[in-house]
Amino acid sequence: MTLSFVQQGEGRDLVLLHGYLASKESFFPQISYFSRFYRVTALDFPGFGGAGELPGAWSVADYADWTADALAALGIVFPHVIAHSFGGRVAVKCLARGDVFDRAVLAGCAGILPRRTLSYHIRVKTYRFVRTFAPAFAERKFGSEEYRRLSPVMRESYKKIVNEDLREDAKKIARPVLFIHGTRDRAVPPSSVAVYLSCIPESTIFRMEGCGHFAHLENPLVFNAAAEEFLQ
Image 1 (cartoon, rainbow, N blue to C red):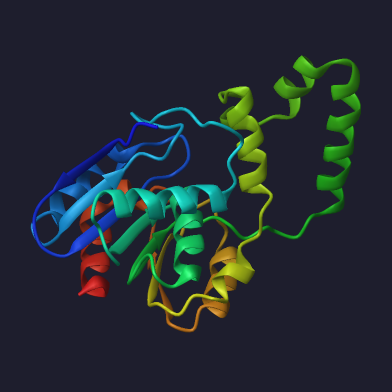
Image 2 (image 1 turned 90 degrees about the vertical axis):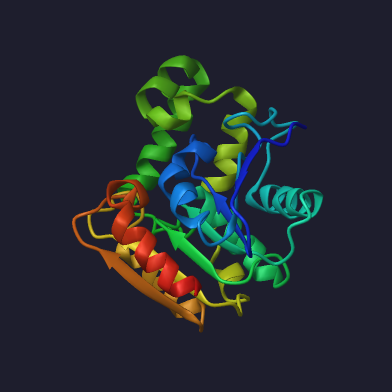
């Protein structure tokens, strides 16, 4: 499997983990900024960017295993980490192990399943019924745009990822964690961040007013300053 990464700067190691359907390049403002103080390594997860294709339908744990192996291959030991969205899921799994990452900045961190409403269960049952005789129509009608863009293997992986709740992993984290949350984030609700904060003793939150799910790109100056203060 191809290991695709960008490494820039000198000093203590800082690793960047991107979101789903993104790549290492999505952290361009952070690479430019933090490489003045750290040796920054931005990875491409398998299936994205310049990395190789997935050999099977990976779960979050599989991505966490790969991340630990990738860091070992690059000679990176116990770095800080900044992760966004799906990258936050992987970081949570790694942090739960205790020996992969030190301090963590998790932005728009996904991984907490919301309460399933009656309308959700009805929609799922309708989708499964329609899929039995019109699978293509079911995917167009019920699948998200993100889901429809995936290959068959990636779709199976995606279902594993989005259907796993990480609160039990979060309870195992004993490292300092800063959650950065855009007040207009529609992908990760405040209730999910509240669950993470209740599970992780050494956690705190920085709210970015007026920002959405991609706060690190919408206002990199404020994001970088908050992350730098926490990491130092």
